[in-house]
Length: 194
Picture 1 (cartoon, rainbow, N blue to C red):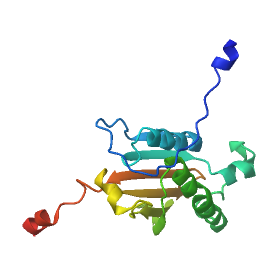
Picture 2 (picture 1 turned 60 degrees about the horizontal axis):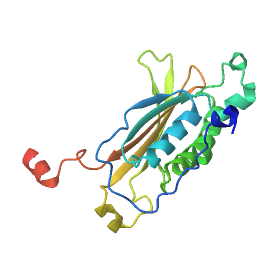
Picture 3 (picture 1 turned 120 degrees about the vertical axis):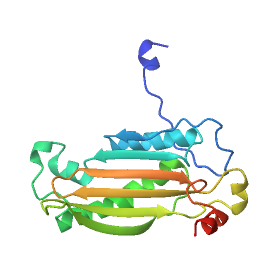
Picture 4 (picture 1 turned 90 degrees about the vertical axis):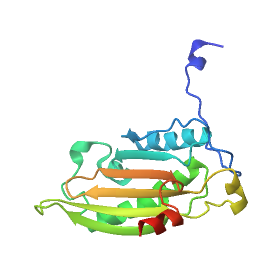
């Protein structure tokens, strides 16, 4: 075998998780920032392979594919109206999120996520010179597993926030998968607080 074959990257397919295993004793996942949607999705896949799909906090900032297609990858061709103030831009972005981003997160994680829209908001800065448009998605379900599967692992929830601004077409996505334990006080603790 020649040297050329040894240097080729190995392509791994995402796995589909059918049964929950115990979480790893040592957690290696940490908050990560990416500038490429491919790197973001690959990290989700790698963490699923490492059995850490329920403890992620990942951020990615990227140009959405429909903008890349319109500008043919040349950022100098980005027009001033390609931002969250434009209804057509928001419509294309919402289509991208629902048809591509969320299904790709589901595929790469190997979990049957069922994201629902949890809200949408537009917020202006204090001077009114710029604004941010946000979509919130969540999955608080059992993610396609029976309740008996959660004997091995605690429940977790997944939140995805997509943010675009009025200054440019770049998209900020935050993906959080967080265990339900430790985040919410138990009922008896709540009773003592009140």
